[in-house]
Structure formats: C-alpha cells, structure tokens
Amino acid sequence: MIEALEFSESNNPVIEVGPGEGKLTRALLELEGIDLWLVEKDDRLPAVLRRKFPQLSKKIIHQDILGLKIDLLFKEQISLVGNYPYNISSQIVFLVIEQRHSIPFMMGMFQREVARRLASSSGSKDYGVLSVLTQVYYDVEYLFDVEPECFDPPPRVWSGVIKMNRKEKEPDMDPVFFKRLVKTAFQQRRKKMSNAIKSMLPMMKDVPSKFLDKRPDNLTVEDYLEISACKS
Image 1 (cartoon, rainbow, N blue to C red):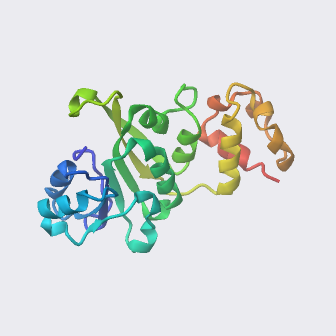
Image 2: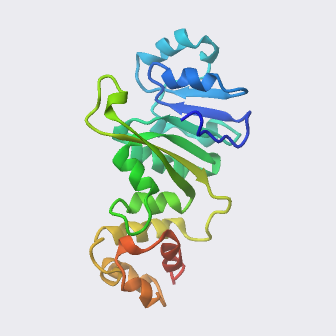
Image 3: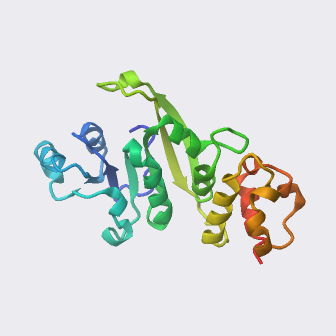
C-alpha cells in the first residue's frame, strides 16, 4: 500500500481513516515530508495513538469520518488513505465524491466485493451504481487482493486494495440528474434501458436508440454521460 501511494504535493495533508492501533500509521510516518493526520472514531484509540505517536498528538481527529467537513478543516488539497471500516466503506466513497474538489487522491483497503465494484467496467457482474458514480469523477485501479489469513483473527471475507485519482477535468453535466439517472437505471439492471429509465424519459429528448436497447450494466460511464446530456 505504501509503495502505491501517489501524493500530488508532498507537503499537502494526508488523512489516514481508521488508524486503529497504528500499524499503517507507523509506515506512513516513514515517508519523507508527510503531513499526516488521523481520523479515529473509537473512543479508546486516540489515547493509544497519542502514546505511540506523540508527534501526532495535535493531529488526531476524534470523529466519525462521515461527519467530517474536509473542505472546512483544510484549505489545501488532501489525500485519503486507510484500511476503511467495511460496514461504511461505500458511504466513505460517496463522502469523497461529495468533497471531490478537496480530494485528488484516495487509496486503501476495502472488502473485496466493494473494491471490485469500484474498479469494475461495464459488462461485469460487479458493475453498478457505485462503479459509475465513482468513475465519472475518478480513475480507479484495483491493486491487489488481501487474504483473510493476513489478519489476526482472520475475517470471513477477502479484502482488496484500490487507488483513485481524480480526473483532471470534471464532466460538464447536471450531477443531481446524472446520479438519479444511474440509480434509476440500475434498479432494474436486467431490463432494457427503455424500460429501466421509462419514468425519466419524459424529462429527456432525442435519447439515442442504441442506448435504450441495451441493459444498464452494458453501458459505459461515457454512455451515461451522453444520455444525461439529453436532459431537456
């Protein structure tokens, strides 16, 4: 994970989410010039982290990441890393999307099923809402699997590590309409788009038939952008 890090600016803040007792933290601190911050929700762990890493005592944010307003806390662009809590990992990704103007880079470990959904392409069984809504803003790369035996105690699931680099240019679209379109389409992913987004068609004009004859999971992110542009 450390080798895969790509910080755009060496002096910009890096936030580690859910550091636990600091195994990844220790490795991060070995990087030259890193401005590391920790976000930890567990009530008992901030004291543990302060004892282990006194140099970070004023950079430990005792808060749920989902309630963190990154753009208000930091004026600079920040990078997000971590072994993300599996029960809220999708919510963390949506938080990053919402605050994407402050977060050019994200990397870390997820439950493998979530990691695959984030990185999957059209036509894959893992491809869905999370894939499209993430990849419209970020280039996502699946790095490697992590076996249950790497943990003590071993979980019942495999893990996967991904990295996300924000795209240089944000698409010219209505993000609220785009999100609604994608969610509506994948609610009926086994039907043709003409049926899956039937309720939204009156809000659009001249949607190419080549899209309407396909199923939602066979359309690319670029296809969804083109359909979204048909909003009347």
